[in-house]
Amino acid sequence: MLEPIMYEGGVFKHNLVIELIEDLGGYVLQTNYMQTEVMIQMLCPHEDISMLEDMAKELRAKITRAPLTGTDIIVIAPTLAYHHLPHHACDVAEYMRRFGANTTLIGLARGVGRRIAQISAKERVLVNEHDLAVFALGNFEDCLINKKYVLYKDLDVPCIITGTPELPEPPMYAKDYVGHLGRIAHRLKLEGELDALDRLVETVGKTLDEQRLEISKDPLTTQPARIMKEIKEQIPEINKSLSPAPITLQLMGARVKLSYAQYKEVLENITFEEGVTLREIAKVLPSEVRDYILIRILPKSVTGFVI
Image 1 (cartoon, rainbow, N blue to C red):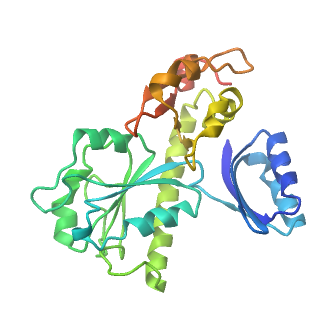
Image 2: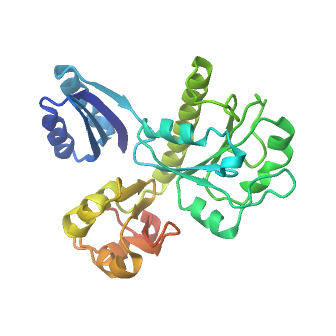
C-alpha cells in the first residue's frame, strides 16, 4: 500500500529523494520550490518508509504523513456573492492546500436561506466527482441541524460540515462536523481559529484514510499516480496546459484538464508496459468541470487483475 508523504527540506541533493522514491516503486506527485527550500508530495510504499526517513535525516529534512496528498476536495459555500459576505470558505480551501490537497471552491446558485436552500442536479454531479466535500456553513445551530442538510443529503461523497456552534454530534447525513468555523468578519488567523482549521484537516485526513481502507478491500486495477505518469509520458500536450494542476489525482482516478471531445480516444489508447490499454482498466468520462476528462479506475473485482 502506498502512503502519502510530504518531504520538506533544502534544495541541496533533493534529487536523491526523488530517485529513491522512483526506485522503491513510489511516485512523485508534485515538487514545489521556494527559494532554497523544496516541498515534495509523494506516494511511498509503506514497508519502505524507513529508508526515506533515513535519507531525510541525512539531508536534515523533515518528512510527515500527509493524508490529504493526492486527493481532490471541494469546498462549498451556500453562496460566494459579495452581499452575503463574510464567509470563511477561502481560508478553509487554502489551508487544506498547504497539507497537499487539491481544492475546488464553489458557491451554490440557490444555497442561501433557511427554507429555500437547495442544490441543483448539475451541482450534485459536480460535487460527486470529488473525493470529499466540505460545507462552509454559518452560525445558527437550528439552521445547521434542521435546515441545511438538504444541501448534502443526496450526495455520494463524504461530507464534512463546518459552522460556529459546537455540536454534540454531526448533523444528519454528515460524516463529521467541525465547530468554531462560521461567519467571521476577518481572515482566520487567531489562535483559536487556526486550531479549528487544524481540527478540520485532521478530520478530513481521518475520513480520507477510511476511504483508502475501504478501497484496499477491493483494490484498484492500477494506482491513479501511475496513470498520471503514463499520461505525462505519452501525451506531451498535457505539459503545455496552463493549469496549475493539469492532472488532478483522486482516490479512484484523476481529472485530466484536456478537452474531452479531442482527447478521449487518445487517453483510452494509452498503453501500459503490461500490454493493457487504459480503456480496459478505467472509464473515461466527461467532467462537469469545463470540458475536462474524468478517469474512474475499475477495481480488481471487475477486471480480474492488478498492474
